[in-house]
Length: 129
View (tube, helix red, strand yellow):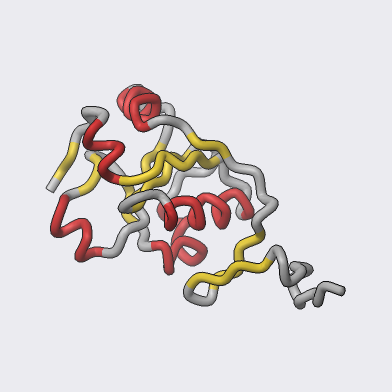
């Protein structure tokens, strides 16, 4: 028998990262970095970097990307991300981007995981430092 938690998650569905609870069954999609670059260039998508500030300082970020560390996504998404516009999220390699995508989808955003910053840079995406 599965224990049901206060938010309606069962033990098998519950994942916690820095105090945020994510439910695995929230649907999200993944697009390639190349597709995200094209959509960002046309203004069709907002790019979101969920890495920590020290990671951005070391490598830069996607040009024009909004920066919200994963731990603050639930608190800052509504004020920093445009409503009604799809979000393409990345981190260093894709794991934190997946968690952020789940949280954003749960908040009603249309969200796509593009993986890691290396995927963006290797696909020819512009980088700002």
